[in-house]
Image: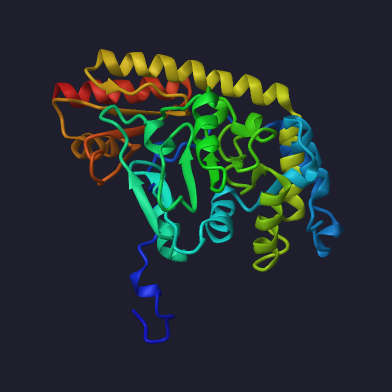
Length: 358
């Protein structure tokens, strides 16, 4: 702690990302990275962008990429917002949409832990709404009368770390119940089996869907995310962004993202491979005695009723396999396991079989 810090810094509890270990023959199943590489077209586009033009600033409006993304969802460019990864977009969302006269932000008690970090950073009042005993979000908890009305509502769909989903009708019910509150749907994993709330934007100007290229587009190292919503919501985010950093995406990122979005064939083939591997992994874990929640993400959330989750994670680490254990209320006996290739999933299950039989 330094006497030179701003007053609020000592009270912050930063988000802790998954371990990035340097272990020989490491199998990294703890940070939900895609097991297959990005589109070859994206890699080639990024190489081609490394020219003398790097001395020039990128297009701060990123109009070509916004137009391409908008076309994919039937939206105009002014309904698309870009950021340096979806986490940066979330930071702008908390600043731009959730500081409203002391009204609380509503969010699930078990969800992406960065939301609580941003609440502390921006001093956003918030209300944690418990998931049910099966870790499902109860829509009725978000649609009843409220006094005061929430400043906004945020949840991940599929949820992280549980992998569970809401239907579009359920999301629409929440948005309809609170027309004066932004309903922000974090869709980092939506391409692995859920429906995007982007389909609701024409009906509900309070809905904002946030996507990332880190998961289904296999570009976690590039740091590109985007939000989709009514032009008024996007304008508010843009005002915050341009008060913070007018150039969040560099020339290489813009080129790679453009090519990745355009390569639908690679996207569809590799995401389907992950979906197939997820279904098989869930079955294999169940055969090993694990209880596995239904998932529509690129991970599964599982517990073994006879073994401590922390001990399992530690035992796997000794074999060079990382999975995510959360030391948090309600979920400290669960493991979040990223779906790998079939070969990687088989290695995981072999290690678990040996660990559980010891």
